[in-house]
Amino acid sequence: MTWKKDMSTEEKLAWRDSKKAEMDGIEKMLSDGIAKMFASENYANYLKFYSGFHRYSLTNTILILIQNPEATLCASYKDWQKKKRQVKKGETGLIVRVPTPKKIKRTDKDGNEEEVSIMFYKKGTVFDISQTEGEPLPEVCKKLTASLEWKDEVIEKLQKFSKFPITFEEITNGANGFFSRVEGKIVVQNGMSDAQTVKTLIHELTHSILHCEGGKCEKADRDTKELQAESVAFCVCNALGLDTSEYSFGYVAGWSKNQSAKDLEKQLNIIGSTAASIIDALGV
Image 1 (cartoon, one colour):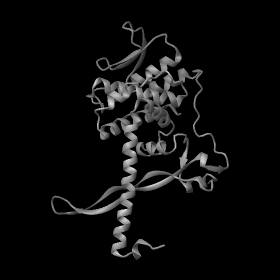
Image 2 (cartoon, helix red, strand yellow; image 1 turned 90 degrees about the horizontal axis):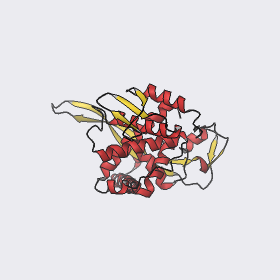
Image 3 (tube, helix red, strand yellow; image 1 turned 90 degrees about the vertical axis):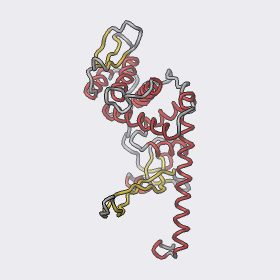
Image 4 (cartoon, helix red, strand yellow; image 1 turned 180 degrees about the horizontal axis):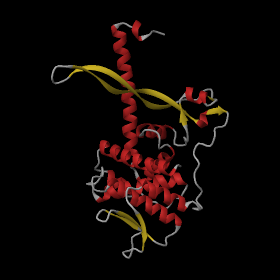
């Protein structure tokens, strides 16, 4: 093997070109994957997948899903060895992007030299647990049963997490709940089933996080706000083990048709980070 320091100038240029082509291929896979996620038949599957991978970056979650939709828990070759599991012979790793910060020197507008950190990415590989063998792992993700005996515990945790008070009232206009920016509170309809209560509360909690005065999506249009709230609620409910079969995202393809790839990626980042914060607050 020839080390980079021993390469000729031509060899170094060829090596850099090959690495750039490699990352360009990963970026193309990612871009195509994001567009496909917003086809109505794929969107719910993506959200279900994300609810189990909410601590991964958006880009790596999508890359893993594209390559192995059945994946449940991924780690690098060495990390699996630390867990006393071995990757099976002949298994092919799943491609991911590995962030690699580098410090470079540059001259600022006043002519002073400064050192800044720039984030680069390189190709990495991970393996799903199904590609390994060895000692069993402790239960990684304990999903709550759908009996909803834990409803009160979930509501209590959400009340602590929420920046706005949560009340249960008789709503006369037919809505299951709403977030009032004027009164600064989340209201959920009294007397609904446990499952509907939890789903509605998470939906309205998302509105209060993203669409309150000064929220990062305060000025989003109504369709985008509803997409965000429904998607976050779907992710969190799936993480809780609630049946999400009644959710319908048939409108997503039409909504996303005129959105750029960057806009779509931005929405997935917002939905993912919001869902992750709620899932972590619930301790799932």
